[in-house]
Image (tube, rainbow, N blue to C red; front, top):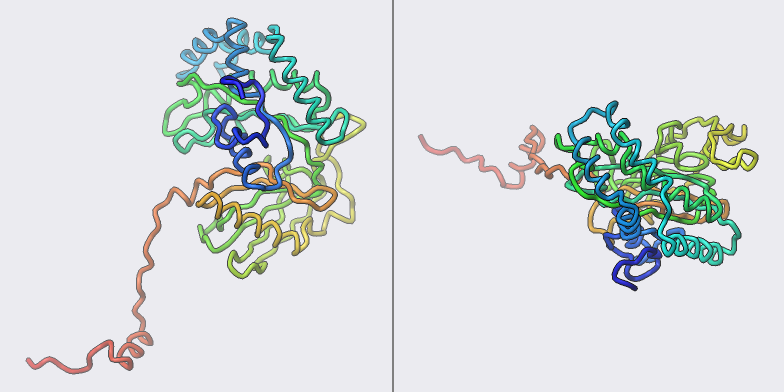
Length: 360
């Protein structure tokens, strides 16, 4: 591998924990190395982004925009970023970079045995996991992109998304995180799973913080329904030790996110009538997901937040893994002993409490 690779595949040994893949995609490199069922793909690295910005002369513009926007309200940011965003979308790409991106997409088509293979094109930023900050939903994601031309176009859109209102105005502990550092972005290109069902799961109970439970939220179709909040998800709670389904709450669903071949895009479309009241997961699938979640938590050594999908063939795919940040950041509280009348009686019977009166 060269010192500054433009392309890095998820199954490359160098991908695991590699910062040039950004937070999201380096995590998928870890998952791939661990043998998890991650769809194949490659990252257009932060090196590629930096090379483009340097060769087009946009690097200094980006630094200036960040300085200006650090203290601006969201509604005033667009006017400051318009020229920079236009430049990112239109200035010529370095020929070597464009050739590598097109060659990588052709290789993914070969690996999947699909001409014009459908891919998800996702932003994976260096700033995603800084100091507990969560950029979930701030950066760009594009689903069901087909063809090398479209991949190149959406790569540019992901780069431009670094300078969107939501990103530059995002604050953590009062600080405009993305606007205060020279952060780069990786663009992940990954085989698209035509999900029959999808969702998220936590290796603890997100309501109580109970680490002996695994919580699963699921919907029919692509997981955008759960992530965006457009669908009320079905909920399942699994005992992490006994692997029994403790709770199941099946939510009625009338629409799902899926690819619309006529429109050539992913859309929110009516769900088949027979599925609307039915569970999108069988108990066997719920338990298979729970076992996978427990394995991931064991490998990573801490509670995890996992995005997953189940394809038409019934196979589970891991789409994203990141640390759970709400309960994991809280200090554990010791359990306080409770003294009740019956516990006192039992203690006296065992001799733990003396009944002999002390002489006055």
